[in-house]
Image (cartoon, rainbow, N blue to C red):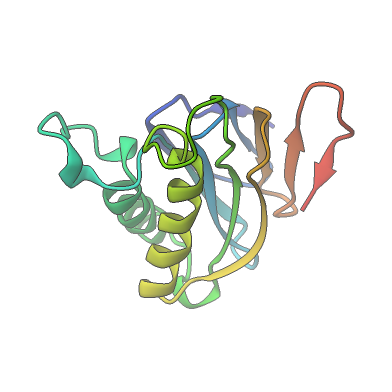
Length: 160
């Protein structure tokens, strides 16, 4: 078994028995796609919901609207069956004490909403999520089982 790290604004895929891990999810989203029959999984750690809001948008994994479709492309090329894919998400926290109407303050919420919208458009079922609140998360996708482990300081490990 290997642990494969997915950095911020990064994505990767693996198959059982390997584990995908990303750390430091605050307002960012860790989104996984998983084929439970072929035991192939993928994860994207994106920072922003929409690549059109900035001219510096060359890193497709940085944005929900480009990172999620790219993850789908890579996982299906690796042998995952698109019709069996399930998605899970974590992150999207409100990490900054700013005005509720501020774009910075709502970025986590907007990131989570973007995941749901894009998954719906791609006809991929979101089966579990751990989003919002005000704390960071580290997540692991275990490709042997499809379990999504969520770790946070001073909180019990959640498995969704």
